[in-house]
Amino acid sequence: MVLSIDDLNRMAVAEFTAAFGDVAEHSPWVAGRAAGARPFADRDAVVDAFAAALRGATRDERLAVLRAHPDLAGRAAIAGDLSEDSRKEQAGAGLDRLTPEEFERFTALNAAYKERFDIPFIFAVKGATAAMILAAFEERSANGREAELDNATDNVCRIMRFRIEDRVAG
Image 1: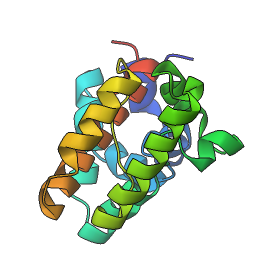
Image 2: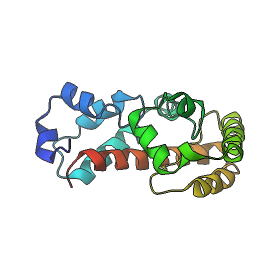
Image 3: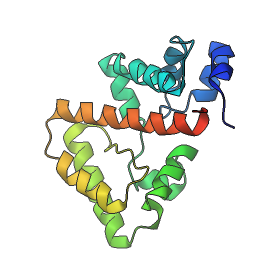
Image 4: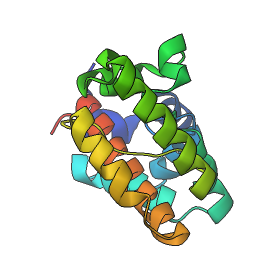
């Protein structure tokens, strides 16, 4: 169901949080804080409110959001334990159709990245291919920790944008 800006502005905070609590992966508090920015003028204002809620969070809160994201083409995907949004997004990038060799490559890169940065590799996969994601893995693995935390946060903001665009009328 696609909602209008008027619909969002009329919702109680609890109702808004229930409707948008999964926009930031397993982190409904982001939606609760974004609700405080209402009334929204348009869909971009909704996106901006979610981004501001995440970027304005404490470091520990932001890390918790980053760590709530699943590995790309990881065990949760194989076990079917992804959120519906994550499942669709990863499938759209072809991550559910990897060859055994590609899957092995993703598994190794996920492990190395998590070891280096203590968060999963986060990439807004909508519109991307497996090859594009692998190239980003390689490129971003050379980043310093703070730069990569910022990069991961930017990607979460892009993911939230895509999810909001799917749910809120433009």
